[in-house]
Image (tube, rainbow, N blue to C red; front, top):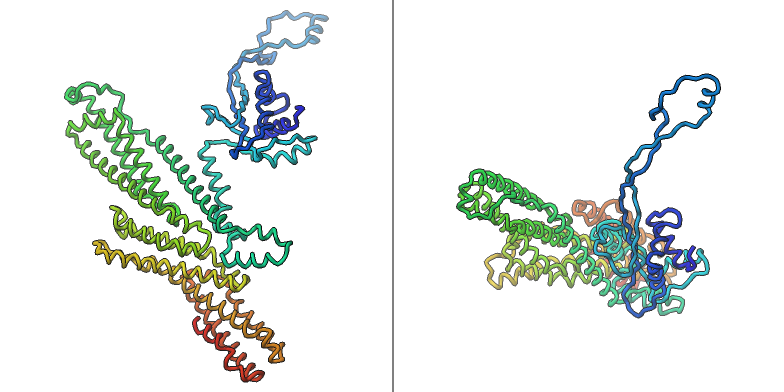
Length: 614
């Protein structure tokens, strides 16, 4: 065991991760190398004190080296050649039986695996992709304290480091960590489920409640300020962008590996073109080469034309065009190889039918590549709006995002050479409408809505309704602007595809807001003041119990009220609600007439006006 228990703890972590047996092993030999310089490197890393904000990292690199060695393998005595001996009697036979068997050996080559370790601080070797990498990332700028025993070391030291094992291509590891580890906790839905995502009204009420006692100071500290929310949203946006760039790089590397296929035959094409054209055998080979290229390029184009975005949201549109542009650009780059260009030049002079067919295919490749590049450029200008729509901190932020988003779509419609048709624009706008509806569904949990504070719930459904209505309102505003400018291409699309679901969801939000308003009016009327005036609190409590039961059919829904296919079911629920409200109003009016006639005509007016809007 090492005298410095911190080094011993590092050793145990490395041996466990890399599965190093016994001691001394390759880790111990590593620390003793070069007169103990690696051991001093580890000690300096642990004792480092700095004011820098950057994280220092101790990196260990594991490689496995194969070696063939010659070994002697024993063979059974009966297999060995035994000299012929005469059969003797008595003691000679007994002596032979008591003697040890004669062993013989044969030479064999066996593969032996040697595990080798390297270490460094904040630096990777040039060929790092060949190694398994294990890193200790320091989370403190102070010296790592020395524990008194290994029990304390195993308890304290893991809190001072972030440990990572890189056991694969770094870009793949990065995309997996971003997708499955870092992005989910920051997503809008996860934050809301964790109780961190609150509207401005909720935050104000929480802050007001927290000023009542010093014991609630910690809760006040947990409420995120608007600046913190903006910084978190900016971080989420940057992480999404990093993930997209990492995926694009992986895609390009994959394409480069897969599309190394436009290989010209290894022929001498340095002669002048006329001489090459007279070589019949050479022309046959070049003709076959063109046919192979024709097939390969056609397959790639057809595959790209058949692909669709892999997700329903608008961000998938950006990824789709970025991947297509990468693949077609990589294929186009293959055509710029000197040998390929020379083959095309020679065959272009041959007036070959295969060459004419290939030229048509290459023209298509160029057309689709330019289209993909331009489309990616245009949809990238909308990325910030798409991110706000997908990961924004509140529904009110979506209300602010939709007008500039729709205006940007109008600009793309006017300027772009490819997003100027309904076939291109309507699917993109459908994706935006889908994302908007998805956010509303995530925010407004109908079954839980009536368990929240009533003012908070009313504000939530109001924001949801405004966002859904703003989508349609922004569309018609851009339409009016385009028509005022006298553009040839009219801003007119299939309204059913764009607004049928959002209009229906807005009507459901309106119904929910009306229900909450009716409940609020009932509770305002049948309060303590009415109990004190009428002198019959029991009957008021019975009425309030019926009011509480109004929302039970909504809380116990067995279907999604925002699903347009369940429209009839939702209307039936609301008709039942209206009928029950009328019954309660009738009983309330009768009760108030008997108990307090002068005020009877005034009290139910707010209820009647609210329920009539449902």
